Image 1 (cartoon, rainbow, N blue to C red):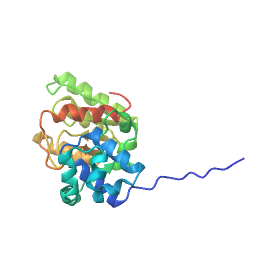
Image 2 (cartoon, rainbow, N blue to C red):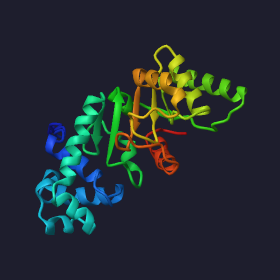
Image 3 (tube, rainbow, N blue to C red):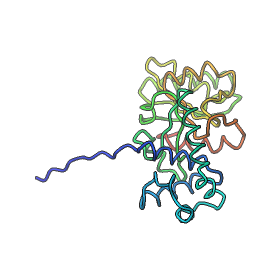
Image 4 (spheres, rainbow, N blue to C red):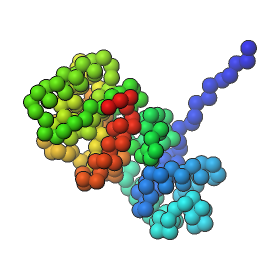
Length: 242
């Protein structure tokens, strides 16, 4: 019988991770454009080459003219280095699509986030999870049932994923935290250093302690209304069901 060795993919280098961050912070670059550019670089000179690429090479990766200039001038790299420094100081980390800890199911959606900002336990992202979401103005009965459901599911080993919003989302996180070994993940529509709504500051800290806080938005990002539909694809994409 022929034996095959299992070779694990090497983790991305620091320079590759810097390149992911640089392109994510580049104006005019959304998730789909970034993915296509990285796929082209991965198949030719390597992702880290983004930081040293010529104007012609950047244009060949499908970057718009303004984005090409932003990367070529070194502004993208400077922004990325500053962002990583701030993130480290804030006690956070980031995962690129090349990282082993990046949620596997999330890669299957149409436009997975190029990178995820994370505070808390990275291992929580790879466990079986289910999302519980709902209205921001539930009835007392709705809150009670949500907490009970989340507590029971968390008690059976499922990670409870929600958006840390008012109402049902908050009840779902509280229910998961009430289970003895409950784990929960909060997916934000703002930066991971922004607590929104402000009355959830204590819950935010508990979710980080019992699981993880996740966002694709840069540090300091304000919770703009347009961010929440974008955030919802992460909630739906990383779980077994909603």
